[in-house]
Amino acid sequence: MKQLQPDLWQTEVERPFPGLTTHAYLLARNEGNVLFYNTSHPHEFERLAELGGISHQLLSHRDEVGESLNAIAARFGSKLGIHELEEADVARVRQANLLFTRRERILGNIEVIPVPGHSPGSTSFLVDSPHGKRYLFTGDTIYRGQGGVWKAGFVPGYTPLEAKPTLAASLRLLGTLKPDLVLSSAFGGESGFQEMHPDEWAQHTERAVEALLAG
Image (cartoon, rainbow, N blue to C red; front, side, top):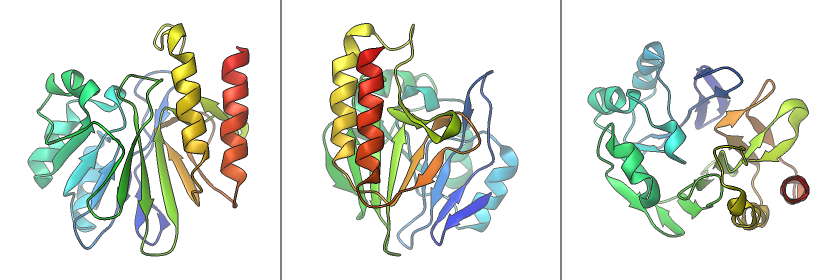
């Protein structure tokens, strides 16, 4: 695992299938650590245990569902959260403990932000770190591509064409936020996260909207 911030860790990269790379991220908290997205590396479980285990695992959407959810729950007794529109996909593996339906704050300092488009129940998470920064976990709604270009999570053959306006609206919603660090689930290139200067994020999201609607 790699430490990114005093309270934030990145798991080893995974390649579920050719052309797709992912990380999971551990948020260390006195109230119980939170794992965003998913990892299937057994050796990372040992490092997660050293860092205090996992109290909650939060998924951004159905693509993060896998058998490792059971392994993580068995090892750490963690609770699982996902949007209710993705529940059927999670249920193939295990039952979710938390179902998101709206924008709300949970677990003290984590804001749940539904961002439909990539999938019906895609969800982003905004964390107010006690260390003074804001972390935005975007899932695949917008992801960091080759050359550091942020792209809309529109996947032909996966995302319906009619979902483009919904996805564009979700991107514009994310663009109103002012994160210091943005971390996507899937990514292209060498890294799935990027530190942001004030107002820089709005420019990235608007360019992603323009490219989405022009395609």
